[in-house]
Image 1 (tube, helix red, strand yellow):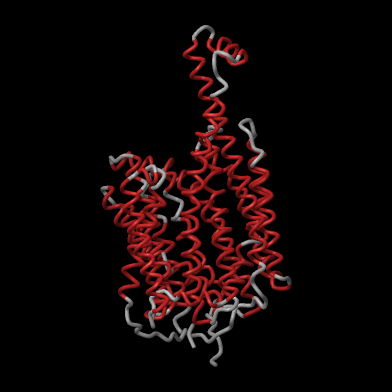
Image 2 (cartoon, helix red, strand yellow; image 1 turned 180 degrees about the vertical axis):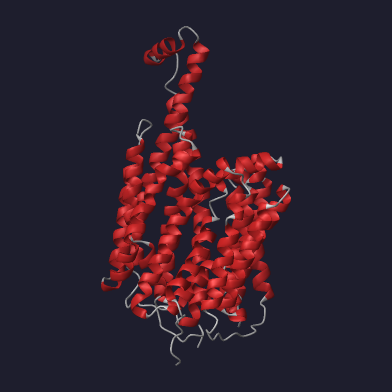
Length: 508
């Protein structure tokens, strides 16, 4: 077995890899707050503008599980460098788009080239660090994964308000060129074994159709009123058929394009399940809290960003401590502690009310940051621990794909639950407002000053607010119990949890 490759400047290589990942993760959220401005500038409805997010998410979801196949074909370094350069190029093309059609097309291509960047970064970091320092490398990547989505909306808001929306894409160009140049130069001497695996066309086509249709259903379900829409029903049927064929084919094909046999590894299965469910719940928090702050408490998008930002403070401070000392402990204990902290903060939010102040909201976000700091690195280490070196890129791609899909499911389910439960509570509260309730009639007289219609409108507004608040509290109570249940899931994994060392080629 050859000795592992070390780049001439490990710190510079790490910066290059981390910057590219930061840019890619940032881009999943940076456009969200700019959609109204983009829609206005390009002359389309706000509903049409959401395809800017959907097209990126669909393409990335399709390309993520192909990482293993692409790595075997082109090699990890070449795939990383070209993905990063193409990401910078498509970012530039997004910025110069003159119509919504052009922007959606370039966002779709951007999502496709973005897919392999995160898993390849993970695989390369593990391969260039000695075993004792791999925890540190994974912790750094975990910090990037947490901080970038928080920074995205704030940065997007500031750029859109002070400059113009194309700059949310243009800022990627110098970062992408720098990161790809650094990694190409530092990893030039790394020997990579490539092969020409036959292309599994059935797997590829069913993956594109199945995952693409599923992602569209999840992104558009709430807007289209779910299964009351023919479009959603038809798209769901297409997705279900394509994914069923994909699963059967991939499990029986000799050379599948996505290696589902990776789930034969116990730690990979348990770790991936914990990652997907925990990330789905974590993603729900990141989605619901800013929405609630803006809809119920009247915050602007920038202030909602500031209220949620303390989440990133503790992960930034603790990253290197967790990375350095985590492997001296049972990683399942660290992950369990993370799930308990995140569960407790969800229970704290289930007691939130309409009059709550900024400090209280920000403080709960800060406490949750402790859970986040202890979550990603141990879970990533556990799920990669029993993979061979030549399986890491494929395993990381598959786990990241499922994590992304879990986030999409969570976004759809939690927003649907929040809306649905708010309607239920509105109906229950409104039942009490009737001519036979002296408290209600007294309040109507007092509020309206003789104008009953005005008073009824004001009371309806209050009931709507309270309905959303009760529903918000219910959803967070449920999320709290999901985190607590995940403690049992992570203990399905068995030590040792050190990532496998391997030759520099990234393959045996």
